[in-house]
Length: 477
Ligand SMILES: Cc1cc2nc3c(=O)[nH]c(=O)nc-3n(C[C@H](O)[C@H](O)[C@H](O)COP(=O)(O)OP(=O)(O)OC[C@H]3O[C@@H](n4cnc5c(N)ncnc54)[C@H](O)[C@@H]3O)c2cc1C
Ligand code: SF4
Image 1 (spheres, rainbow, N blue to C red):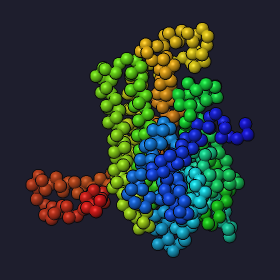
Image 2: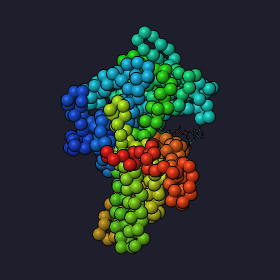
Image 3: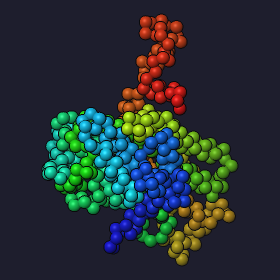
């Protein structure tokens, strides 16, 4: 096969990215913006949020694309890399009089003029998780600078789980974690074209992925759309100065990771769009099985919807409670973004459990599409896989396969495992929720109402709003 994009395992992920362009054409108010650099219409995925409306519309676009594809459409990591780098480069320049912000704007201009796909590469392979980059037995466990010339730097290492990288035109590499002075060479942010010399892609396996190579379109469950991840290996990849947006400013690495995850954790409202599809599939199989009137079935669909809307509610609230950074870019609320992502690490698993409950055991034991098309066996399956008399057996099989695809198969990668680990594993959110929970303030509220008099609660508690509660009670919103 000459074109890797035509490989049956890869094609569904291309279709998912293509949908982002299609939506920009059919619904430009949702998925397109006018570029501030070129004045042309471009994908919203390339636009830095400059208002609360921008943040909110990113979320609405993500939910819609989740509904249309039932999978990961792969472009939000790059979008949130731009969102976060916009303010971080501005602040590095303020401190060190570097020129990163203008370089980033020039790079954005270039991306806007081509309306291309940019992947965000933050996660390193990390080796021994208890050690900092410079302490690792192998220095390549984190991407780092291995050489310098007058024109730029050479980097080596690897980025893991890279979503949509085969479908991207450029990759934005960023550090994964807080760095110290000894990790200075690891404090590198830069852009590389995906076909740069020294880059290699090792494609990730997904559950049931070879079904797409068996012909037919039933057993794959979702024949048209799928996600994609690969490991990207960097072997002395050159980054010229004009595409470098951090070089050695290790003290800004944690700020970048925090800003990126604040944007990206509310981007996980994408899963509420995917959840809409799964809830629909569960309702459809209940109908095909003739059990829609049972009260527990309706209750389970209500529970699935409740969980799904809780994900959406916290994500969209994080965007509505966004605020301006000194660069002018708007960032979502850190607490609510982390709460959204933390819900996502759990609720899709419960929604999947309920979908499998409604589906019955056939979701895991259904005979193959080839058997269904077999002249003798097919007749048996047509007879014995029948649910309600007026529903074609093939329709029942297709919905069961879709539920399998989303809860056990290819798209369970996006709906379940990516929900758990993408944008950080659950503990990463709990750390930030703990950091913002303002227990001292809450204890004072309690002491005042309980009538416990202390020196500290004599003054009005409300007058000292800071952090999360300053945003909650911001009267300008
Ligand atoms: C489908 C998918 C797509 C993804 N797409 C992208 C992408 O496009 N770009 C990108 O940059 N990243 C991407 N990621 C990466 C994602 O951000 C990471 O998976 C996540 O940060 C967790 O890292 P890890 O997978 O290395 O797990 P680990 O870090 O190994 O975590 C495993 C467990 O160990 C715990 N742990 C880890 N370190 C420590 C420690 N020091 N002390 C105590 N406990 C620890 C964690 O809390 C977790 O419970 C993707 C991931 C997935 C699954
Ligand atoms: S997991 Fe969701 S937020 Fe991340 S790239 Fe895929 S669709 Fe976008």
